[in-house]
Length: 352
Image 1 (cartoon, rainbow, N blue to C red):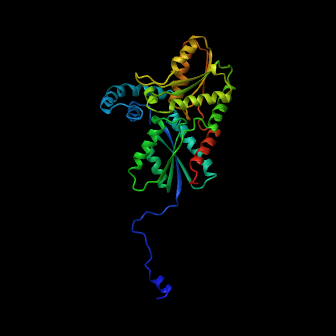
Image 2 (image 1 turned 120 degrees about the horizontal axis):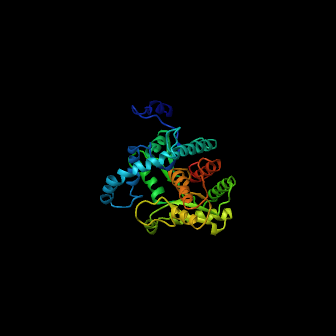
Image 3 (image 1 turned 60 degrees about the horizontal axis):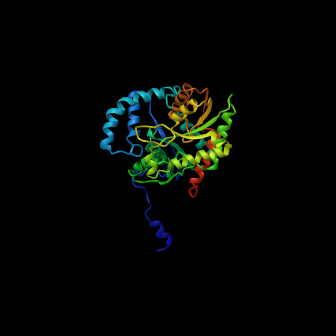
C-alpha cells in the first residue's frame, strides 16, 4: 500500500460531542485587595465582618473559643458602628466603598497600559473579603482562556494577615478545579526604588499645597498583634524599612519623622507606637502642625479616610493641635499605575 493510500484510509480525528471550544492561550493577572462590604446596613456589615474576623490568619484563636464571642457579642454591636464609619466615606454616586471604586480604576488603567504593550494578557481584580471574590476573579480569567495566572496582592509589605490569606483563598478555589492554571504569586515591594520614589513624589506634591509647614510627618501603618511578629511575620520590619527609606528619600530629619501603627482590635498588645496616642502626645506637648500618610495601603479606604483623615484629625485638634493634613494613598495616580505595570511585567518574566 502506498503512502498516499495509507493516509487516505486514516479516520479523521474529531472532537467528542459537546467538547468545549478550544481557546487561544492567554495570561491572566488578578489584582487582589483586602475587601469591602456591599453596603453599610447592619446585615451587609455583619456578613463582611464575619468573613473577615473568622479568618484564622487575622484572628489566630481556636474556633471553639473565638466564634461564640464573635457571633454572639462582637457581631451584635460592631456592624452598626462600622456601618456608620463607612457611611461617612461612602461613594454614594456609585453606591460602593472608595476601596472598590479605586481598585476598579487601578485595574482598568493597568489593563489599558499592559494591553498597549502585551496583546495576550487579561487583567481583573478581586477582594479577599466581600465582592468581587477571588473565586470569581480566577473563574473570569480561566473563562477567557488564561492557562497561566499571576496573583498580584496589592500590599507593599508582606504579612500572613494580608498577602498570605489572599493567596490561601485563591488556592482553596484552585483545589476545586479539574484543570488548574499555572499560578504565580507576587513579591512585596516595600523597599523597591520605584515605590519609594512614587511615595516621595506624592508627599512632596501634597505638602506643596499646604499653607503651613508640618513640624512632624507620621507614617501610620496598619497594626498587627505583637505575637504575630514574635512568631516570624516580617511585616513590622518591612514597615520600618519602608518608612526609613521614604524619610531618607525626602531628606527629612529623623527627629521630625515618626513611624506608628493604627487599627488596634482587642485587648492584646499590638505593634507600637500606636498612632492615636502618638497624635495625642504630640498635640499635648505643643506640636501644632502635622501631616500623615499610610504607606501600607495602595488605595484609600476606611482605615485612611475615616480612621486617619477624620478621626485622627479630630483627635489631634481636640488635644491642642491646629493643622492636620492627611496625604492620600497612591490610588490610581499615573506614576503608581506605571509602577504596578513594571512590577507585574517583572513577575511575568518567562511567560511573556
